[in-house]
Length: 327
Image 1 (cartoon, one colour):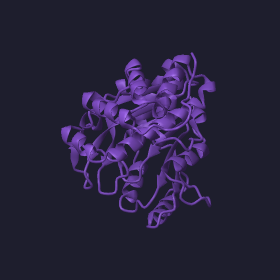
Image 2: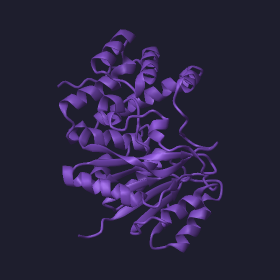
Image 3: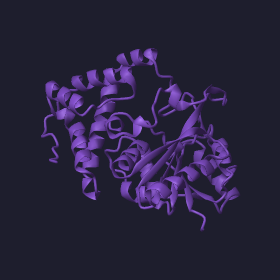
């Protein structure tokens, strides 16, 4: 059997502090036949020079994507890389983490097993757990899922995934079928990993591997990060309701973008659920509550779900016609 083509995509932006370590961890993988596509998103530090030096040391496997498009932002940057990745399987890397040596081997084995069960034409996303570490790589939590109180199986069900992404980009692999269906990512995609997880959920499968393959480094410059979930974190969100509600609106606009692809084979039930979620900003609070309860839309855990319900009901109403999909 021919070896699969495996491409890793990495968008860098002002990541000089940890980038060299990350690139070294990729080069130490037990699966050696990979190619890395790296695009720098207009960094003002030494990120590009570090990447170019790595490419000179390993020119067969590390390729720099050069274009004149400047800073695209994280979603568009990863969309660009996925569109250029000629591969059977694509992994996503962040600039500040470290990969455990068997990350590719372990994830690829799970992906190929999933393709045997569901067929290579099925859009598939496989994601793993992560080990949460501090900036010096000291372990904060052996499991990101447990640290954040996430259920990786329930979290791939559409009624939960629409409101709460439980898939971490740097721990996921997608197959060619999913890449072809999901890219290019629309401007309304809230994050590249969330968009890919939703497309896989709607048109294929999302599968979880209960093993950490990444040292998920937490530091002052994390764009997302992984703080421990609990009452203290929940209470902290009460002080910034505008940010919480802005995040909810991004998810609802992302749902509208998903509806634009329903002609690709979305089931009638899924289309109705996505349309219901996308419609929430346009409805009065009573109708919102009815939709939330009827469709059992929620987040991970009771505490998050209560906050979700309160904040959805508090969203300012937008003046437009709500999207409707008839079954």
